[in-house]
Image 1 (spheres, one colour):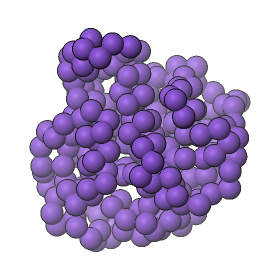
Image 2 (spheres, rainbow, N blue to C red):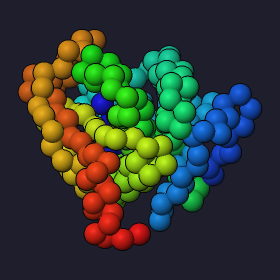
Image 3 (cartoon, rainbow, N blue to C red):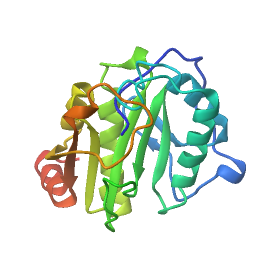
Image 4 (tube, rainbow, N blue to C red):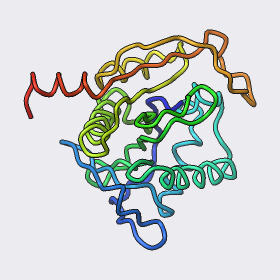
Length: 217
């Protein structure tokens, strides 16, 4: 499950989505600081930089990924956008500075029962952007988009129980603790802290609507 992370990367302007990767059902989103654009082929080098940082991958694989592994992951991420119209991965920029990526995709994997109207929320940030509020800012926008535009009924996020930074981001984004569980997934490598299990946080559309009515636009 993606956590809040990062690494030093070459700054690039937010590229436009074009060619075979164009998906009109997955829009570009904006926050006060972020421009979130749908993941496309031209973002591969940014993913390589991100996933090759062992600190970024600490609670995911416990090690940096090889380029070949990132390329395979990139193809899976691109394919995720074809599952449900409007959902998928977004790459985030603050002006010309690459921040990381965010995901809102249908439930997948052994720990995520496939329920219509639900989606998994995630994020992964370059290390130099940690603790600056970017992860929660992007997550809140995806929650708004998921409930307000896509019509989802529930959004959840999962991470290792020991991943306190990611859990804090989930809370900051408006999610609340839902459950603790032991993952059914098989790790290729032993990730430190995996023996303490996983946690899931959630927010429902009705809860989001109630908060939105109280706080206004």
